[in-house]
Image (cartoon, rainbow, N blue to C red; front, side, top):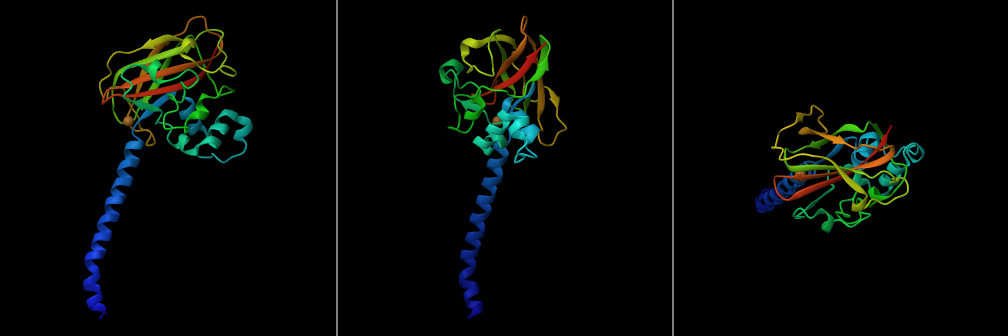
Length: 234
Ligand SMILES: [Cu+2]
């Protein structure tokens, strides 16, 4: 009887195993593509910086006082921090201002719903010291390449601790032409992979806190990445 039952069940068992294998494959595949994006890593974007500084210790309550804006971001949506490389939109067609309302620039216009909304909140974000001429480094994990990178810096007078970021606050400070896929500095950090691309930036006359806003028009298809990095001049 047990032999007969085994024979009768084995096609079902094979079917179950096949479905399980397919699901496993899809999970691995989607996890792989989800991690295959990027962001500004220097000066770090809000999303990358909070992941890099606290990803190994994100439940540490000291973050609330040491790095309060990262704390509110981790509290808002942990997945946004794990998916630090996913702040992008598709099909924008180059009309960034049309796709992203004022006040939502850091979340790429609330891409993915509410997930990245905490990135738009003004406050005491950890700020990287920079000179008026500096280099922005964007990390491209999956060798997407770029049609262009554009880097903006907020105008003098903008205060990231109190002001929501709008398009009218930005001045272009650096840009590139086409960057072929794979061009850049390869990373030996297994959490990153891919290549880092450096962009020269000039922001004369700036003092104090500012936001560096980065637009990366990837070239594999119409996928555009956006990122806010907090800096302090002088
Ligand atoms: Cu990607």
